[in-house]
Image (cartoon, rainbow, N blue to C red; front, side, top):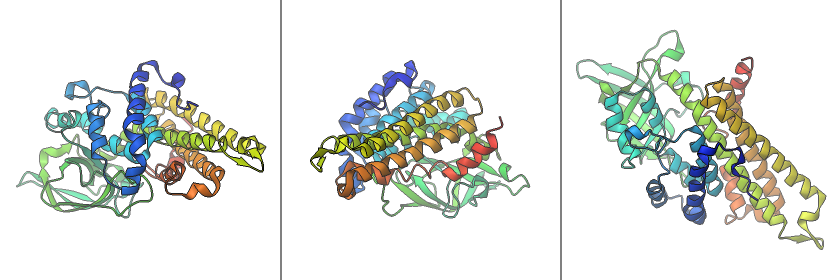
Length: 385
């Protein structure tokens, strides 16, 4: 059963998809349970992914990357998350936010910050969410004030749920720079080295899912960065993120599809290798119907997601398609994981079972990159276009 078969994948993205599958089978899947149990950061696997050219390679060739496009990153996401979501997230977060610097940063910023990430000498992250604010991008309170005399920006506030907050060399950080009436024009993006004075970060306590990926709580206490670390134009941060998240939500759809595929695989194998009431469990019509529903939902989500990838890549009502793909794919992952747990019966709750790990992991993508309730707002508002 090859649920992630390549027929819907654009031809140019199939080679990197095959690379990702081979890597996942060799490095991620065999270590997944170990890292889930320990909750340790998978440095060795991340470094192996770097050596394989599968980490931070959406950065263009001009700055040291492979220039992988949206279709190729989406294809990698499906394969990594099918093997393990926690390790997969770690590998995909290693350059998270760097795309904003490439799109809007100065040539000096790209040379100083992008190239070391593309060459896998550094890792980065994106700092947006706060302890009391997640999906409301125009409600963040972390501030950035310019100290004209010192030629610096002074940051104050907190960030929460930030991937690589502790491990990263630098972050792309979203902060409030004004109090104008246009609440969407009050925010800007900054490059913040994690060794900047006034930057402190600690790991968030252990999570139930995606345990091989580390998120952190950042406290910015008069954190000072050079004024040239402003990315692009002051006040354009909200709009930068809106565009960035359109691409990101397509990839998160890939997260959901990889998890859904894992759930279906586990359920199929289990019911075809177990007997009850002197019959193979797969012979019961109720079981067959559950598997049929899982497969139909998966195929519908995958078709939508790949169609949405094309719409976003071509800039055709990108917000609608990105939100639709992310919502459908991550919710199908939850549906498939719950059904797979039911088919496994009592064994589903055993820590050692892959289906148990998948069941925990699927709860997370419905929240990150904008909770699905917010995505439904976007889908409704942009349906008229």
